[in-house]
Length: 379
Ligand SMILES: *Cc1c(COP(=O)(O)O)cnc(C)c1O
Image (cartoon, rainbow, N blue to C red; front, side, top):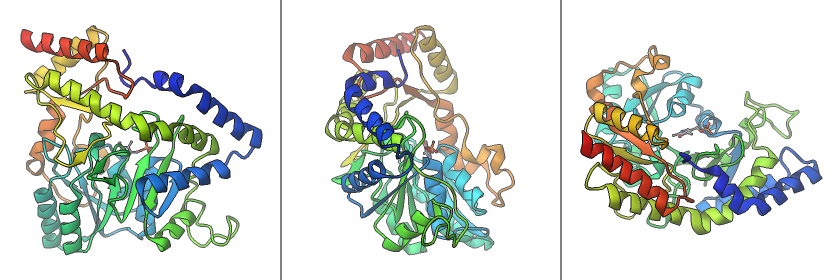
């Protein structure tokens, strides 16, 4: 069994994907061109945001957003302690200070009380300027943007939505990647909408920011890329990746998000008596980048993972280590201690992500669930 079976999706979409890739090769327009602008148009329409700016990956997308706002040394950027490294890496990369915030154990997303506490701590210490909050739509579920927006407005913070795992999710009818002042996503192959290499995109309604982002991603270009008015990056989505995404997008919109939700529902129905199954808030829809259960303690989690592996069932621990414990952030200039992150600590010890993708069959879900139950009844 595959953890995320990309082959099955390829077999389903083979003729469209092959045709699109071939047409890029025929055009020999490998960077930029028709495919990329077509994709940006379609993504912006789907998310219902004015501008979509594609780039090389989801990490660059976050960093470009911080660059466009001029975030730098002396600035505090708030982000969850429980996320992929990129969310904090980009903050340090522009010279600012990541300030970690604890998460909720049920949704895995940023905890509003903890956010308000950390903002207060930073203000009391008086060394850093609170500038940005980066909520992450972890495992596919949007963060609580009503509450985040209330806090951000009160404190004068920009909201940068890290929708790398959330593309395709929504709150009511409002789509993921429309909640930030700037929002970003990733098209890494295993994300909800993935290409066949690296890729990313940035979304905003703000015309000026959109223009700045288009400059920063192409060497800080002015009139063209040989007129350089600021220090930027080389961060473009290549045309073959755009071609793959254009072939996948219609099916992603029409079927995949819905299929993912019915698979998650089946998993939860089968497992809810024996483990903590993921909670999706009322009126929220997840795009299910991961299906993540919680066990009662680390020993049981590790034992279950080993048992599943012996049965040929892959599983993953997202994430092993809280962000504030990553060695790279040791000298980041903001004092924090483990007590601030008790929920993150608990999650790192107890989470396990199970095989999941929109093309999973009922019998595969059954095999995973049977084995989870078999192991748990034996301990
Ligand atoms: C994958 C991921 C990223 C980075 O995306 P890349 O395209 O791999 O650079 C950023 N944030 C989160 C939460 C992610 O899961």
